[in-house]
Length: 296
Ligand code: PXG
Image (cartoon, rainbow, N blue to C red; front, top):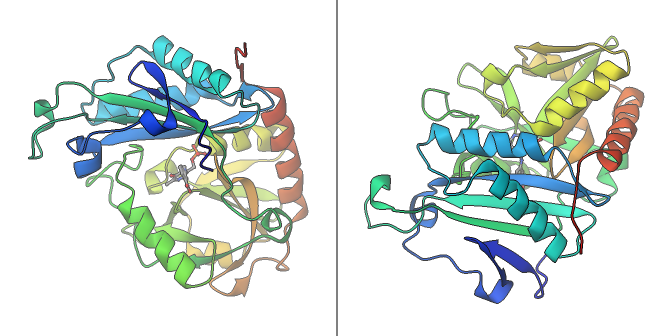
């Protein structure tokens, strides 16, 4: 949602969008070397800000990227960026790049990481899909093994997921299931997956190759508050083919039903009742909790 009057946080300053520029020698651009978070603002509060920042600092630590400001300074920079743009609802993209360096992989040649924060809007899926549900395919592109790159690092290199997303779009679907190297369900290209069968809810374990989604965690709390049980399991495609209901979770997607998988209807091919209840409860949670933005 390009809005020419946006103020962007860039390395300690709020600058107009037209001045928010990164060097062509930044290793974030040259190698995808860096990490990021996508965070939501609901009703003037930032949803699960601490959890997102913990994940950001853990991603950075895992790739030996020294974030040049403290956790508290990052929290303040994020809140200030949202306040400066007067956003009451929206999406925050927080990016830490390895910074400017020489040509060559060596990250130790990059003296200082760069930080930028964009506070704007996001529309991932068309509004009607929240009522009609998404169609999913199985992507041929697999999640990389944890031994190659931990799925817990939310790195700037999303090519693997983008290749899978291309498969989805070419198949006329909005999202797709990514399997791990063993062929078990890991997650979707940018969302986590849940299914319901016989009144019990299941989601792949993190060790299946799923990102430990912040929305996933919030939705698991919502499910337990509803008195339902959620199991973290090794999931197969068969489990989704034979599920009663299915939904996806993600910061951008929130909670969205999935009604078709590999051209087969999931359950009766319509969003499930439990899914719709979880969506309503998640909305209520998102709109009533979070870190308040210090608007002027
Ligand atoms: N899995 C992957 C691979 C993700 O990238 C999620 C799950 C959901 O996690 P959260 O913490 O958001 O509940 C994500 C996050 C996009 C986009 O444009 C998607 C994400 C992040 C940034 C952009 O589709 N998904």
